[in-house]
Image 1 (cartoon, one colour):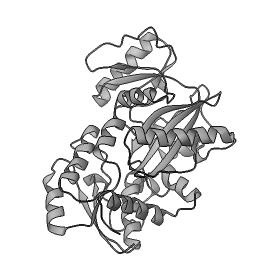
Image 2 (cartoon, helix red, strand yellow):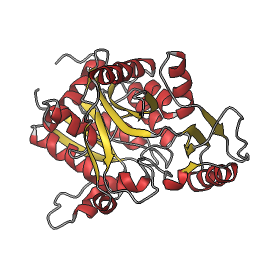
Image 3 (cartoon, helix red, strand yellow):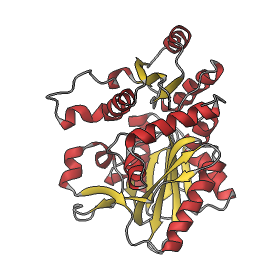
Image 4 (cartoon, one colour):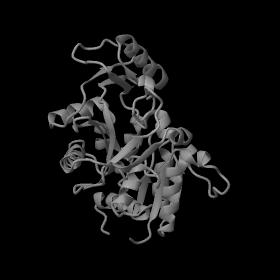
Length: 340
């Protein structure tokens, strides 16, 4: 690939320093993706300019008009403090007719709502847990069809925000308490899903129309506290010390029958097409004890730090981190009709 001018969008607090010498892992953890992406693209010969974006869209328009990047590398997970607004930034890039990496705004909208995505996928015969949504300001009244245990989450926040061991509830009283917690802490509606006892499975998908499914990946737990559930809580996702203490590892899923692997890979493609996901995404499943893969959520533009699940799965499939990022860039250019 020829050298490109790449405008990289990130939250202002996540723009890494030029020199990280002397910084600890915990200090660099929050912006590891932004650091890995920017330094790797520069090492590949591209000119990369970082732009912090949080409450104003004008800087994006100005940078596109003044600097004229070949492509925008989108690493924004929110805008103005709202995760739902991230799709609007991508819509702006489309209006500006500038190529960008990652998912289109339609796919981001369909995937972000955990209720909407499950309704669409159930129509297409994708196994998904039963659920109920509890809007802001309303008490949690459990439908009779919804049986315990349940897991309670934000309706649209990702990255396991608000998820803890207490998210799994087995009484109406606990359900009401956890729904109120989500409403108050995250200021979003809550969704309560049938809890699937089993394995935490992730599947990376790369591509626009023709999709490449990465190796089936698993988040494993070797040293959980007694009575704890094997779920990806907020601490599991974002606390390196806790990860080490509890023996939380990610790697290729082991001992899966070939038929189950084929089923998971087929579902990952069907989900991506149904939700109109392109660029790169990650599909999360819970694999039940009888090996049924239940769709949990789709993650457009997932975490792609070199050490994280997506990049590690790509590496396991023979794609280096630099090649992965360049493929993501190339997919954005192809979608825009740019000849390479």
